[in-house]
Amino acid sequence: MADFCPECDNLLRKKNENGKIYLVCKCGFQKELEQNSEKLNSSIQKKKIDLEKNLIIISEEDKVSVNLKTKKNCPKCGFTEAETWQVQIRGADEPMTHFFKCLKCKYTWREN
Ligand SMILES: [Zn+2]
Ligand SMILES: [Zn+2]
Image (cartoon, rainbow, N blue to C red; front, side, top):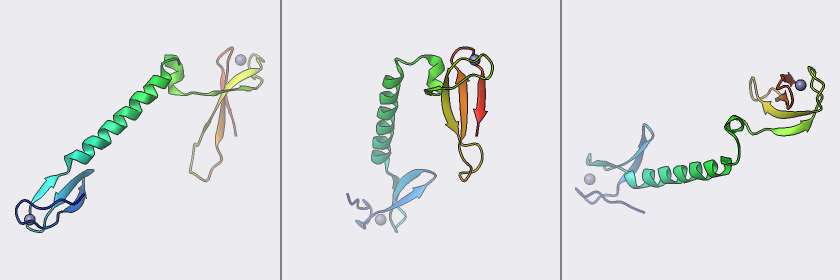
């Protein structure tokens, strides 16, 4: 979609400044491109709503991290099931650290 300057009818160029998109003309005219940013915001908003819909059945505590259950012996109480999730602690080159949380006593530990 081409936009023309209302002052001199030259083609406006897009300029990105501080995260906002402006249409600028060489004559000095400029306007913020609001239409696109609104569209962007509403699509982000929609995604957020979709995400929240999916989270309704999950409890408040689980919202923070949706973890997988795995067969793992708790080093504290010996229970055989734990939640597991992975965290990249240092740089991107480092392997993931696996975290486990006992489903019975909530003891949390990590293994590399
Ligand atoms: Zn102009
Ligand atoms: Zn345990």
